[in-house]
Image (cartoon, rainbow, N blue to C red; front, side, top):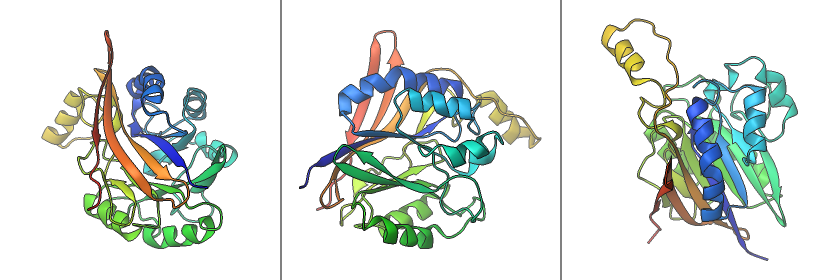
Length: 278
């Protein structure tokens, strides 16, 4: 019997500002979108790069159901054993065999199940295994269990992310890009039913350079000298997408990108529906 599953996906959580913004906005967003599951990329939640077991627990206990990560998942060594033990956090599936953790898992939601897959792109990124071949192998396993598959595609190059979206169109329910921390304006449903956006954006300080203190990043570009970056805190906001999926076919019905900004008078929300296929 077909129904609808609603997924709320939050972009990269960056530092304390991102964590605070999520804590403040998530109850409001849950009322607004009524999600069946909340997924967030947490690879930069600890000081702007990496994630610790304590922070991961805090996020998972604060209303997030599944955490994805990316190439910065390995910054904090303490998280390695946590990745093995905690099934609600994922690392990219296309890292070599033997690394800690799991790259995908299937999560129950009342009568239905959603497969969540974490993958890294390779252009301007680490030399990981091919994400295209990796998703082919994963989909062979998921198809017997659930038609609903969401992919966090953690990539630098917009061309690689878009190519991946077209490659899995009709085979995955959604491809949500992360990593660049800049929300893109290309949310859409692809012709065969896959919801797509190149990057969901970030949860972090708006007054920053991709979540880090602007003056430090500017100095690094101007002088070309090594510089330690610190996460910014000014005007924290939450960016992400909401996706509605047909539980019978696994095809997406809707996608909306949003930005939520907490303030003294409440949460200011700007949401924009994605393009639908002709």
